[in-house]
Image (cartoon, helix red, strand yellow):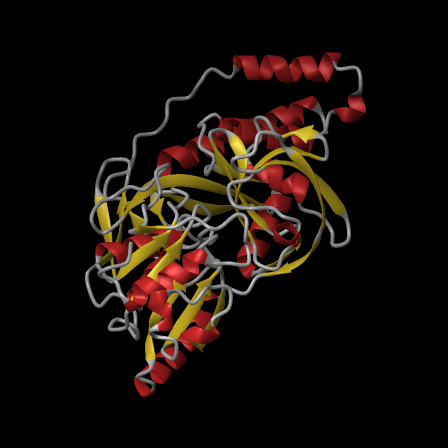
Length: 426
C-alpha cells in the first residue's frame, strides 16, 4: 500500500471518529445486534468537536515512511490500529477502548460464555493491570490467581502503560499453550511468577443448591447455625452477566419460587455476587427486578447531569423471600448495580468486602471489518443516588476471608447467620 493510500485511509478514519464522538449520544450498553436492550437518545445533539492540528501526525508518518530502516516492519494495519488506539487512550479512561478485530471477537466470545485463555476478568486500577476476578474452575484460579492481584509482567514483558485489551491480547491464547504472569498478591511485598496453561473456558452464569444448614460445606456450625441446623437455605451463585444469563435465571427462579412455596423449611436465599465482573446494564435491571417489587432499579446520569431512571420490570418471583447478598472486591459493574439496588430498597443486607467500584456505562459499537469501540457515555447511580465509582459498595456486615484456611468460607457462614438473624448480625 502506497504512502498516499495510507494517508487517505487515516484521514477517513480520523474524520469518521471525530464525527462519531461529535454526533453520537445514544445511551446503551449493548451491541446493536443484541436484543432486547434499551437505547435512549438525548433530546439535544452535542456540539461537534473542533478539529485539531494534525500536522505533527503527518510529519511523523512521513518520517517513518522515508527514514525507517526496515520497510518490512511498516505495517499499514498496525499503523491504523495504533493511531486509533492512541486517540482513544488519550482520554485516560480504562473503559473507553478501541478493539481491533481479534480483541473484539475475544470480547464477544467472553460474553457468549466460551473462549480460550486463562479464565480471569481484568481491569485497570491506578494505571495498573489488576485481576478483577478469576473465573470459577478456570486455569487462573487453579493456579492461585486471586481478586486484586496486580499483573506486573506477562512473559517477562512489563505491563506498565498497558490498557485492558493489550493485557488480554498477550494473555489469551490457544488451549494447551502456557503463559507466565508475574503477579503481586495483595498484602505481599514481592511479586511471584505463576505459569498457567491455557484452556477452553466455558462460563456458566448460574449455579445453585438448596441444603439444610448442617449439610452446607465450607462453613463451621457456629452457635447461631447449630440452633437452626435442620433449616434450609438456597444458595445462588451468579458468576457473570452474559448472553445466556436471563434465560438461565428465568428457569432457575421459576423452580425456586415453586419449591420455596411448598417447603416452609427454606429460610431464604444467599445470593453470591463475589468475583462477578459484571456485564449488561439491562440484565442487571432484570435480575434486580426479581427481588424488588417496584421502584427504580438503577439511575443513569449523562454528561449534562440529566438522569434516566430504569424501573424494575420483571416477574418478581422472589420479592417476598428473605435474601442476603455476598460481595467482595471482585464484584464489579452490573453485579454492583444489583447489590446496590437490593440494598437501597432494603431488600437485602450486603455481607463480605467492599466491592470493586466501577460506576460507568459503556456503549459498544461495531465499526465494520470486525473492529469495535467501547465508549464511556454515562455513569450509573444506585436508587438512592450513590455513585460507587472507585469507592465500591460498603457491606452492612464486613467479613474478610480466612487467608490461612481457604477451605473455611467465613463470608458464606456470616451470610447464613445474617439470613437467620438479620437484626443482630455484626
